[in-house]
Image 1 (tube, one colour):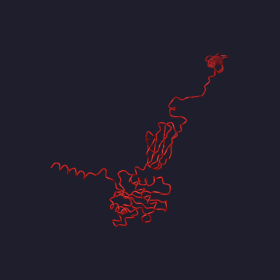
Image 2 (cartoon, one colour):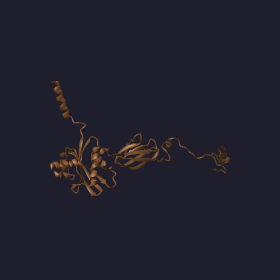
Image 3 (tube, rainbow, N blue to C red):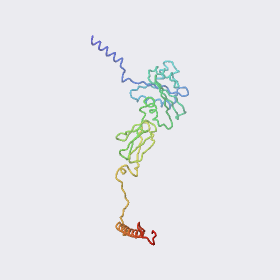
Image 4 (cartoon, one colour):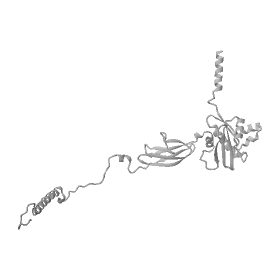
Length: 292
């Protein structure tokens, strides 16, 4: 009896607890062009690449476009074959194939030069969208990059490899301090990043660097040293001017000047005394009975 109760409790726990290893099911709807399914050779090749990129994501199961088409045919719902990115239609399609996420795409262009507008619809969440270019310049990583942007945007990153010739420099990306690893590698989101490298003794290195998906971009940092560095300002000043001491002539030496001052003082005293001696004083002689 106790064993039966224990088994029942374990069964209830297994039912109630979510399966941590449960796979996310992603369905790829048939790509459309001008409101109808695009069956061109280039689009079929693209569909295979998109399915492979979805299957490469961890813990993800893909329901391919062919399987989705078969499910639509069996359910006799031809309107689901061309949802034209309508969320309600894609939600119904997801229920039909038991998918958590449905990716649909609209193809615009002729031949191999095409632009595909993709979106990922998931019930209760905001629809995500991106574009994919075929037959032209595409820095977004192709079909794999497009799937990463839709289903795992945090993994849409590239790497910068820094080669800095001034040890002890500090790296900033978009104004925030960054820490490259021991090999000088730094993982960043794809796009244009503002890079600044600073050092107290060197001028700042400033560049805008494009980070590509899954690529390593080299950043060679050649720092230019200031003419006067901080340690020189903190030390004792150095004067490289030559100083030569020359004796003044005899008539400008201190003892000559001092002696001249003494002689001049004595002469001045004699002259002043003489002048004072001839001045009338308080007592005068009477001459002829009149006051002097």
